[in-house]
Length: 80
Image (cartoon, rainbow, N blue to C red; front, side):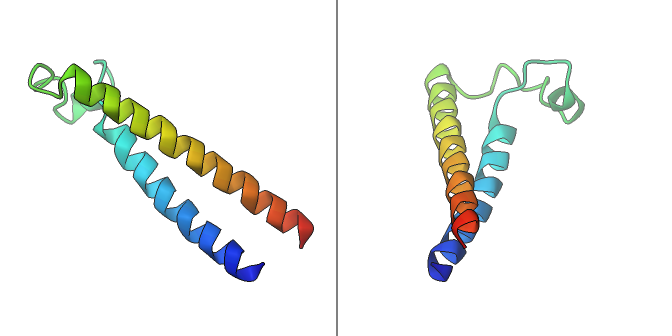
């Protein structure tokens, strides 16, 4: 049970970092922090519609995996 907990904690750290990076890759809607860091300048030269949809799917899938790992860690903690 301890090995599973360690593996889940490693997966949790990796998915947390990846979710943050993927969220930062999204195109800004304007008026927020993305404009402050130059996101408004290159809004037309950003990603295409297909790339943005794939990025959305990947972000949502990774967020669901992150949620599942947290639930599993909570269940393991409760059993121990």
